[in-house]
Length: 446
Ligand SMILES: C[S@@+](CC[C@H](N)C(=O)[O-])C[C@H]1O[C@@H](n2cnc3c(N)ncnc32)[C@H](O)[C@@H]1O
Ligand SMILES: [Zn+2]
Image (tube, rainbow, N blue to C red):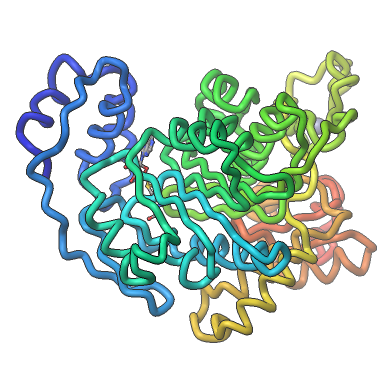
C-alpha cells in the first residue's frame, strides 16, 4: 500500500522498541488494516523519522454504510465493530448541541473521517475539525465529508498534524471545542492534557484506550507511566481498564484546575476498546472521593475500596495478620460511578427518536444503554462477581443468573448485570455472602 521506501526504512534502523511493540500488538489483535498503518504512524511521529511523504498511496474502494451514511474507508484503519462507540458519541454530541445551541467538534484521530461525517450529519455539528496524522488519508476524508456537506459551506476542515499539535494550535488560537473525540491506539494518555486545554468549560471529552495488557495488570509500570495507576491482575480487569482511563483524566484535569464527571463508560470486547465520555467542569475538587485504591483478596474473593489515608493499613478481614498477603491492590483509580443514569436515558430517548431502537437485534444499542443504566445504581460499588469464580469457590454449579439476582434483591442487596461481561453480577454483596445465597438456592449446606 505504501511505497517501498517507507517499508524499507521501517524495517531497518528506524524500527525502535515502540514500533516493535506496535507490530506485535497489531499482529496479536488481528486488525483489518495492514501493519503498515501502525508502522507508518509510529515512525512518522518519531523524532528519528525523516519526514517522507507517502507517494504511492491509492485510496481503496472500501465502501461501507453506517446508519445509512455511505463512506469510503480508503484503506484507513476502520473497524465495523466500533460502530456502537460511534453511535454513542454521536448521540452525546447531539445532546450537547441541543443544550448549547451550537456544536464544534474536534475529531483528533479521524482515520477515514467516518466519525467526523457522522458528527456533521447526525449531530448537526456547526463545525468539525477532522485530523489524522496520516496524509495519505486526506482525499478519502475530504471525499467522505464532502458527501455530507460541500466544502464551500466551511463547516469542516481536514488537517494532517500530530494530534497534540492540532489541539495545541487551536488552544493557542483560543478556538475551543464543545466535543473532542480521541480515538487512539494503545494507551495514548499523552493526548489528555492538550485535549483538556482545548475543551470549553462544560465540554465533552470522548477518550479511548485499547491497552488490555495494562488493564489486565500485566504491565503495571506501563499503566503507572500512562495513567498514574499501578494496576495488578483483578477478576474484573475490564472494568478496571475503564477506571484506569477515567483516573488518568481525573489526574490531568486536576493538574489544570478542573474536575470531570463520567457520563458513560463503555467496554467493547473487540480490540479491546475502553471508551469513556467525560464532562469537563471548572475548578479542582478538594477531596479525593472517587479516586483511590481497589483491593481484591484472592483468599476469600472479597473486594475492598481503600482511601489515601488508609495507605499502609490495607488488609482483608479474612486474614489474621494485619497485612494480608492475599490482597492485591491497584490504584489510584476512579472508584466512583461509571455512568450518569439521567444522561443515558436522554441518549436512549434520542436514539428512539432517530429510529435506532428495535432494529438491531440481540446486541442492540438499546440493550447496551439499559445495562449501563442498571449499572448506574448508586448503591453499586466498583467491580463485579463472575459467576464461574463464585461457583469454583463454592464448589457448586451456578444457579441461573436471574434466580441469583432475584434472591439478592429479596435480601436487600443491589444487583445488576454488567455490560462488560454477561456471566457476572454487579452487587454490593460480598463474595462471602454471595456464596451463601448461591448455596441456599442449590440447597447445599452453608
Ligand atoms: C483508531 S484509528 C481511528 C479510527 C477512526 N476514528 C474511526 O472511527 O474509524 C487511529 C487513527 O489515528 C491516526 N494516528 C495515530 N497516531 C496519531 C497521532 N499521534 N496524531 C494524529 N493521528 C494519529 C492513525 O493514522 C489512525 O488513522
Ligand atoms: Zn480476604
